[in-house]
Length: 315
Image (cartoon, rainbow, N blue to C red):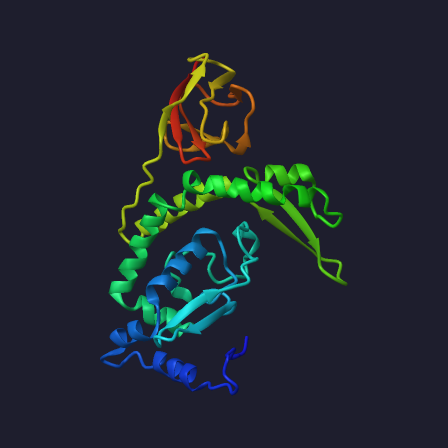
């Protein structure tokens, strides 16, 4: 993308932005960090980067090098304005060509080509601010508990329009499931025999998955940011059993929306189920193929809740 100036002046004056770019390429200056804070709104930009990471938005400055405006405020400081965020919420396994699939919370791989990113994160002060910001979002606004009401409101707002749209890609049933379940969309590339398959995760489970991802990322920077999720006991019967274990499902914030893992005593996951909307009060696990022994059954709720219990398979 080229440099384009939008202004209310009769003549375009690029001197200010050229000076800023020139400044970014002088990190050896003794007053560089202090001057950067005067010239650029770092705090709010880092909030934007953190949100982009959480919602898997990759077509931006730190990844693709595009889709943004710099607003020169009357106080002389530049403000960051992101735009065109359609490449969001995707299953990143489909984006194997991108440069951020390593998932780093701090986008170090792009720094050679992104002098602004390099300037900010070479400052220990702003690096630590960004790391702690991740924790604040996890424990605050970026949670299903905080966002669900608004998400459902927007979902319902467009539901009738989507139902009546003759050009929609997916069924109404798929649309209704999109809050909780992954769905696949296949798009044919124009004038080619090729198609792209995109996997879009259910939005509420995605929030919880991304919170868990961020916690693991932050651990790599020695930042302990535990989720402190709501806990409940998982009860299954018969216990001990031989072939089947029937789980008694608790209610969570969205009714009964869970994913399930069965873990044997050495920590190996032997069975797992993706996010499911479970309408019944019970969920039956087929344990026929498992060897005798003790198993931990873990239920993860889309609201961030977590439950576990022990089930024993007999001879």
